[in-house]
Every structure is written in C-alpha cells, then in structure tokens.
Length: 133
Image 1 (cartoon, helix red, strand yellow):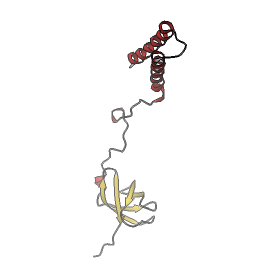
Image 2 (cartoon, one colour):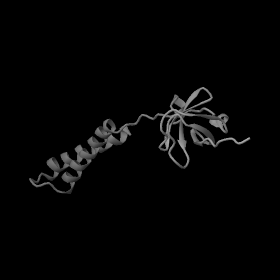
Image 3 (cartoon, rainbow, N blue to C red):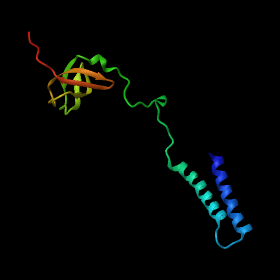
Image 4 (spheres, rainbow, N blue to C red):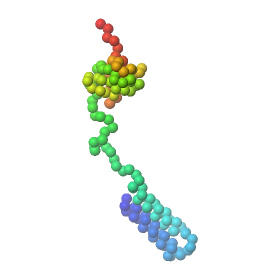
C-alpha cells in the first residue's frame, strides 16, 4: 500500500510541475487539476490509515464471544430464581449462579425453577411443576 500512496503523490507532484513549468498557463488545466486530485487522494490514504481501526480481536488471541462451558449438564435440574425473571435473570442451579431466560410467564424471585432447555450459553427455565405422589 505504501508504494501506491507514494506513486499517487509523486504522480500528482509531477502533473502539477508539468502544469506550472511546461504548460505555463495561469489557469489550471486538466494536468494541474489531475495532479492536485492525485496528491489529495495519496495524502488521504495516509490519513485514512490512522483513522481506521485495523486491530483484529479473534479467538486465536484469546477473545471469545461466549464462554465455552457446556451447560447441557444442567438440563432437567431444579433450582431457585435469585432475581425476577422478566424473562432474563439469575438463578441458582446446583450450587452455581447462572444467567437464565424464562419461557412463558415472568417468574418471581425465590421461586423454584427447572431447566427445560439449553442452546449454547442460553439456559431456558420454567416454574417447577408440583410433584404429585
């Protein structure tokens, strides 16, 4: 990219000098205007390099969009809602605080819940139904 910027600026300077020395008119013609545009474009690419973020944050550098934990072990387990689930909130399942999403109605805090589904890091819960013996 450096060679392109250098080429654009050098070509622009050449065209401006050609306009001033060879053509020698007081008004700018095609060569002068083209030279000025090439210089502006060349300098713009230099400035653009400093304005655009080029740093990549990828998983190869340790950045992940979600935890790589397997939440399927909580499927079917019961727990207690720690916060009101409207529909998202926190629950204690198996001595672990989890971020969960309720399916259906809102669930109040301190209500028994059951994990009914897991999709990646999304844990879906509903109110625990009463067991009849």
